[in-house]
Length: 295
Image 1 (cartoon, rainbow, N blue to C red):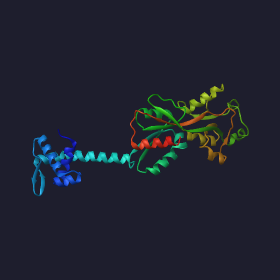
Image 2: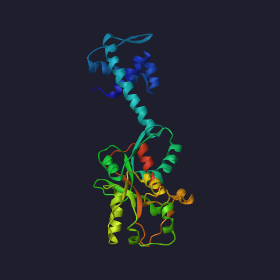
Image 3: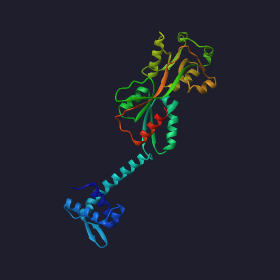
């Protein structure tokens, strides 16, 4: 029976025109190399080498076999080298589906640390809404997702909270008087609100928050992404909920003010979503471990 090892030995014998040299390269002994090549010739039913005191040369049949074996061996060796590099994290690709808030609040800083340690690992980040990131993971388009709550997933997906955060209500200079004292949510119902569009987890979260206080949530303006909310507030187009940490610079420069609420805004989390049935390369596994280490 012909094995891969026979063809590997054949490749090196043909390369170096010597059984002895092939044995040295393969860290084997010359009699064993000779035996394997005799077996290969017997299995193929043809002579592959012409032996002489100067070494060995290929027969016409041997040349034909070598043309095919050389291509196959070089491809296999390339794959082996690539896999070895990936295992050592000297190469590799990680694809991540991330919501914008998760990316800015937490993921970018973690990626900076990871990239410093493993500069040759490539990162491909798709900026999605939470539902889009989950869908990309279900479709196998990303290795994992990092998104903000609320998150709805189906088996076999698995959710792991990794970073809590809080949103606050902010307004521009036009609404500065509202920052003087805490307000009931109902007192603000006549003010224009800015929020994300329908069919986003954030919009549904605040619709439920208002409903829990017997109020309807009908934003006057809709932003396509979270980062659009801050400039819209700064230009006094309305008031809106925004991650406290991301609003810090604007609060310091007083381009926006915090509007305190008696009814605390819902607590939120950044969550890591993985598919346990999906194969992860070494680089993705390492990054996931780093994300979980800091929980």
